[in-house]
Amino acid sequence: ELEAQMAPLFGALPKNEGGGLDAASAKYALKRHFLGHHHWRIEAFGANEDQVRSYSSTPMHGVAGRIADILESTLASSHIGLRELAMLAAAIEKAVKIDSADLLSEAMAVHGVSEQDLDEETQDLVLQTFMLFYILPDSDYSQQSSGRIKQYLGLAQRVYPAWKETLEWVQVMKQAVQSERNTLQALVEDLVFGYPHFFSSQCSSLRDLLLKFEQPGTGHVPLSKLRSTSSADHIPNSIWQFSESDEELRAMGVLAESDEKLSAVIIPNYILADSNCLPSSQIVSICCRSECDDLLTGLEGQLRNPTASAQQLSDWTRAVSPNVSQELLEKLEDIVNSHGGSLPIHGNAFAQWMHSVFPTQCPYRQDARASTAQSIKNAAAGAIVSLERRWPSVR
Image (cartoon, rainbow, N blue to C red; front, side, top):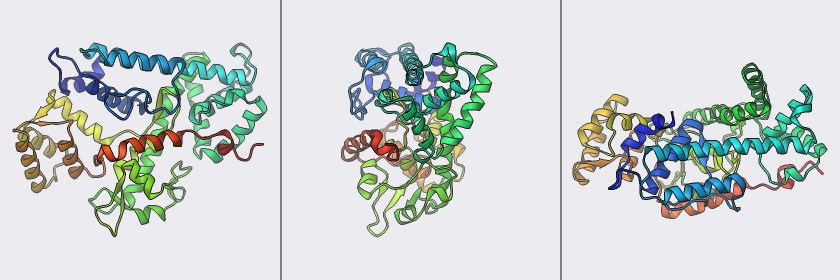
């Protein structure tokens, strides 16, 4: 199944002399696959194409460390075919399942219970604790008493405004899973694989809100408008705060500053920013999906080739965006001609052109050298919040 899912993307990526992918292309394929199918960002992958482990600011232990070792050794291979790519994807999915089992064990241990002696009330307490550990992770939870964890659960709505809806969703999932597979481990696996899709409703609400304030046709929201907007006024139980400083937005690669008098946030860049992800584990974080990747998937399935002619790209663009301007199509032809008549569809030139055609769906590629390192640093720092800062009301 994984091979079938990844085959169109694999077919559209450039191959080495052996017919396989190099490390950079394999990483790109895995990133695209997991963000598209599971709303996951792989934490072991770094900002640079030849890096592994650089998202996390702390050493990777246990299953996270083992999966990083597997990625490093496989990506160092001179031949990464479709089978090897699917095996890597399967290893990551298995690691997430193992991690969920460990998290469930921690949730039961902190309350001093085992799966064999769970009544309905205690099972709900364990599930709530599991979701707390999953959505708002912290290595210090295991050192807290059962009473302290219960206090955190009582305050979770203040820290994560979608907490109430999350627990309601857990109950729906619980009823569905118990009718098919009556084990707690089966349930938490479904929670881990299903919650990112539940989270996507927040992403959709964020996208709709930003589009409401867009400068028509630009994909931009004036920074002044964003700063004066409270997402809570428009999105029930919103987790988005719009509290980033200019420096943070610049480091995230989401700020458009071509007009000195009117700085603006680039909508798709903001939606896809690392800081909008939930750092659920050392293996993956939950992030918003890319609508641009969905467009690109359609093109990849049609081409099954890493490059395309101006005619192929023009025909595809007219099919998905009938109102595309002749000016943009002529610009595309110029870009293709400057690349010798065949344009790489995963390169910067085509990505920037895609942003021109789909400004609210496709991100603008900022200068990676200027922004990536600081962006990753900020994202990692933002993911680590001490218990004292997160739960200031608990003493």
